[in-house]
Structure formats: structure tokens, C-alpha cells
Image (cartoon, rainbow, N blue to C red; front, side, top):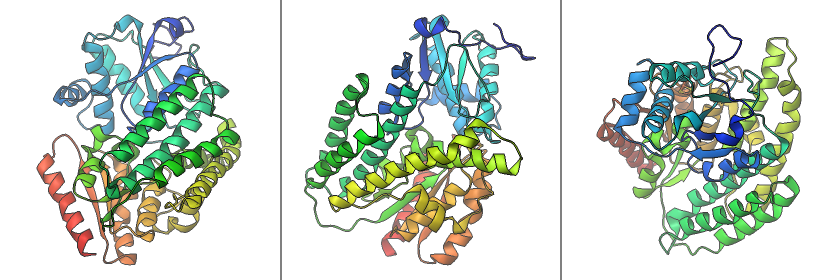
Length: 416
Ligand code: SF4
């Protein structure tokens, strides 16, 4: 153990980079199969956890507070169960946790995880903080330009694949064709990432074109599926463990899922660095670089939409569009957690033809009570016939209750 803080914690040292496996919790189902290559590009032996059982929830409760938000509960539980499973040499394992740099628990539960490790007798396991705001540093972990480029490329390609999968698969004539295309492209891109290819912004345009071309060839049946927008807190929106397989359930019920990409969340976080500098009268590196980063990622989104338009496929909502045309429901001052982005995504879905909107809300999330639940009446005022509802996600609520609520939204959407 080392460190200079009042409560010392295990640090991830340079030597550990060669010896340790870095475990990453489940978070972004669609993005992690490619995102993991960003860590490999930096020379880390990264592995994404995918296991889930009642044990995970129980471990979360046992080793953290029972009033902590549901995503924290699941992530801590998943780490502890993995370390106790015997599958990993705990003396050669490190954990990686993203820290958003904001005021919500997403930035602070790294300390809870460390406490949980001590309680489980594994306080020697280092927890690496993944952040852009400099809240924590480790001598053995740094984000290199190559890692950054690979991560950015992985997010953009995954956003495009997710979008195409969502808008094409409900109509495919040959069942499973879209899933197969996603797998084929993941394999191709993984191979390219391994050799450091297709990660530069100028090389991505051609790939966007080829992906769109492949999806445009999928034979579709003519049918009307209710289009449901899914938004909410980032973990329960993107992670099937957190939302109990929400997107698959909707597809199984014959719906088309409409979701904004993860790049929008990235740009929202970058933008907040700048807003915080202005509001709190400070000057940080991340704040200074954020306008450029937002511009670069935004230009890639535009390029992606060009490719979609070329093949007459539905376009994706860009961050610029969300900010300019959909932010009426919230306020830019809501920068805690997912803040105004939730209401903007809901407004975007309804403005773009969705028949209903599900806002996934995790237990114990104050942000969701204000920025998500708090804007529903405004959304309903502008779209009085749309089915808009918050759906709670926590380990105590029975699946039957949650699914019934979702089915109710679907039946309203059918009428709409
Ligand atoms: S946004 Fe809510 S659920 Fe997500 S980490 Fe923050 S407090 Fe927890």
C-alpha cells in the first residue's frame, strides 16, 4: 500500500502494467467489445466482465451502503464476485472504474469500491480511475494518444452499428441477419484495431460508408412497429444488466428501439468541463481542450450521417442537434450526472417520430429524479398523445412489475 492521502489505497504502479489483468465492469454492452481494444492499444491486459447473477446484487449490498445508487451497487457487486470467484489471481488483478469528474456518485463511488475491497480482505487490489478531469493519477496508468484515438473510433463505429441494428433488425426478412452483420463488422474492426488501423478520423469515413452499404442491402418486410425511444441514466440505458435486458425485451415485443449514441454522452461530459470552468471561475486543461474535442467528434457524427443519407438510411441525432433543437425540456445548468441530456434525448425521440419514450431510472439516483422524472410533464405538454414514462430499475422491484409497466407503454404507443 502506498499513497499520500489520509486513507492510503493500493496504487497501480508501472511494474503492474506487465503483470496485472485489468478488469472492467459491464457498462456499455454494444460498445465494450470494441472499446476494450483502446486499453490493449496502451499495453494493458484488459478484460470486460460480463457475468451476472443474484450473487452480484447480494455482494453489492453486503460490501457497500444499501442506499447507494443501483449502478454503483451492481458494479461493486460484480467486481467483488469476480475477485472471489477464483478465476483471477487477486495479487495480479487491478480494477478499472470510470470517474466522470462531476458531483454525482459516478465520480465518488471509487472510494466506496476501495472500502468494499478492504472489507472483503482485498484492500491490496488497485483500483484505477479512468477520468479526463485529473481527479486521480496512477504512475502505471496513462491514456496515450493511440488509446484515445482507438477509444474514439470504437465509440463512433459502435454507435453506428447500434443505430443500424436498432432501426433495421425489427424489419429484417431473414431473422438474425442484422446480428450477423454486427458480428462481422466487430470482427473486422477488432482485427484492424489490433494492428492500429482505422482509428484516424480521416480513415473512418470509408468504413462508415461500407457499414451503411452492408445494412442497406438487408431485405426488409413492410410492417409497422411502434418506435420506442430509450433514454435515461447512462448505465441503465446502455447496460442490459442494469436495465434487465430492456432493449431486447422491446424488440421481442415487436418494437423498434430508438437510442441516442454514446458519443453524445461523451460530448456532453466534455462540454461540461468548459461550463464548469466558466461557472466556477477556473481554468483547467480539459476545459480548454473541450471545444476542440467536441468539434472533432461532432464532425465525425456529420460524416456518419452523410454515409447514412447516401444509402437512404435513417440518420442519427448529433450532439449539435440535441443541444440546439431538443434542450427546451431541460436546462443547461443541469450538468450533474446525465443532466439535461436525458430530457434532450427524450425530446429528440418524440420529435423524430417515436410513439413512446421510456426513461430508465435507477434506484437511489437523485439526478434522475430531477433531470428525468422532473421533465416528464413538460414533455407530455408538448406531445400529449405520446406514451412517456419513467421506469424504475432496482434489485427490489419485481421483473413482472417492471415489464407490465413497459407493456403498458407499448400498448399506448400502439394506439398513438
Ligand atoms: S447519475 Fe445517478 S445512478 Fe448514475 S452514478 Fe450518478 S447518482 Fe448513480
